[in-house]
Image (tube, rainbow, N blue to C red; front, side, top):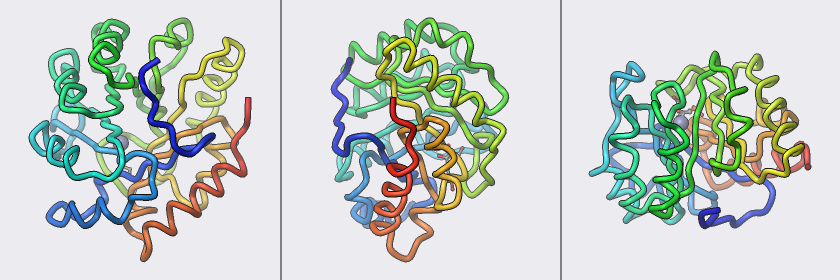
Length: 230
Ligand code: DX5
Ligand code: ZN
């Protein structure tokens, strides 16, 4: 497996900079130094109806961030674009299964460059095809909102899929991380942890807090308390 940069044991809290102030990025990154990774949402206005930034911006975030980068690519043609994010130094690069033509070979390319390889699924996408290739990935991201925007409501109907993946991972002795993203906050993190998530993206719940550092500590405590251990 690629280097995990694991700092905090069982659960990881990855604030999403989609909820940060884009013109005060350096200051906002400094506020989340207690996080495990910074979650970086790349959107291309094709795969999702929203646009953020590309490798040039991510490279500057990489140079500035106090914590490793967890890049979430909501883009078409990940085979064409994803390796560049691994090459610029992102610790983890996650692409969408729906957009990928060769998910396993892309994951192998990302790992060969030295990144953790992640695959993401939208709320309506089935995950059965992933269970036989779990070890090809370091992380599976189960979206808990439709990708594209921060501040949406958590979709509890995605929890059975997460539970299924957690069961399969345990049964197969896999160490793949199970990530959730969208609507994660004080009131929802417990149910995602209980269903088997161990890696939590939170945008508004961290950057919308008066004290983002304290929000990270509180989310971590709640996730750790509810996480269903193997
Ligand atoms: C949504 C993004 C998320 C988003 C989460 O498509 O992938 O990472 O920033 O934001 P919150 O935590 O506010 O739902
Ligand atoms: Zn995301």
